[in-house]
Length: 125
Image 1 (cartoon, rainbow, N blue to C red):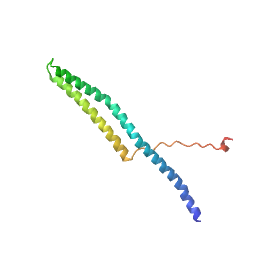
Image 2: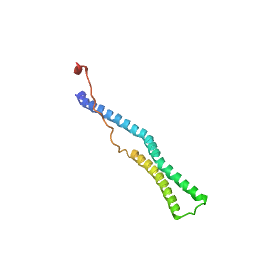
Image 3: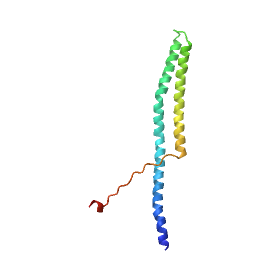
Image 4: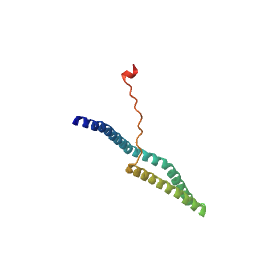
């Protein structure tokens, strides 16, 4: 009688262990994807930082020549390029923080489970 009582426990233990292994694999995959995701975000935000930083440097070089008077428009342009550079830096930090807290929360979607198709010798013949 005790053998029949333990059989349902064994039947439920196997799917639970398989589910735990699948969950562990998903956790490892997400942890492995974090550096790749962050690299993608940093690389995507390098272009605005480079454009705005280069433009600000060009404006400073233009102002530094002294050939032309510094007007409020050149100061406004310099401020706008500096604001663009600051925005790119803040966006890079925000992308890191969002991915970090998403990974730390543990509330990511479950991995996609594809249906299994099993073919036996009797079904083929």
